[in-house]
Length: 230
Image (cartoon, rainbow, N blue to C red; front, side, top):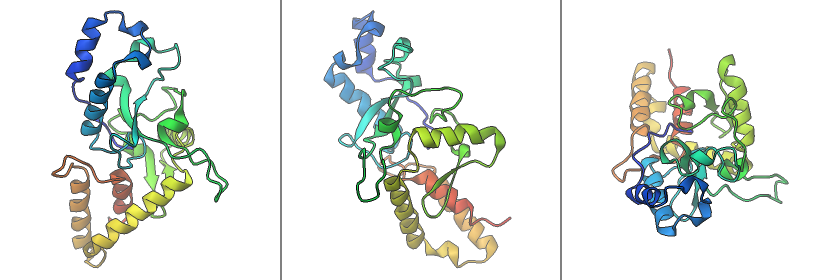
C-alpha cells in the first residue's frame, strides 16, 4: 500500500454534480459512462498506475473504481461521489478460486466488497500507511511489529486478501527481478551498499518519466530497507 496524494476532482464530475443537485440520492450506476471514464483516468494518473491496495500495475482495462466507504450500503450516501476522500482505483482483484492451490485468491477491492471499519482499515489515504506493513523477500506481507499498528494491519491484510497466493507470487517475482537488475548494492562495502540502497529507495518513491510508479514499489522498498546496516 502506498499513500495517495489526491488531485482535484475531474471537471466532468464537478459539472455533473452541479447539474444534479440531488446527486447524493442517485445510484452510482446512473453516473454517465463518460464521467466514470474520466474519473478512472484521473485516479490512475494520480496513483501512478498502481492499485490503491496492493500496488500491482493497473490500467483502464484491469482496474475498477473503488469506494473506500462502500457505495452499496446506505451508511455512506454522502461519500458515494466524493472524489477526494472516497474514490480510488483498485486492481480487478484476481479470481475467486484457484483449484490448483485450493485457495481463495481474490484480493483488494474485490475481496473487500462492502466491508469498512475506520478503526480497523489501513487506508491508502493515510500518509503513513506504509508503516503498517513489512514485506519478506518471499513476497509475504506481515503486520508491523509496533503494537499500536498491529491489529489494524492484521485486519487489513485479512479483509483485503493481501496474502493471496497469486499476490505473494507476483511480489516475489518483482523483488527477484529488481535485485537481479541492481546487483551493485549486494557487492559493495556496508557504507557503499547503504548509500546505494538509499538512492534506489528515493527513486522508487518517485514516478518515472511516464508518470508511473514501479509495480509493487512499496514491497521492494520494504525489502531493500532490510539490506541497510546501522
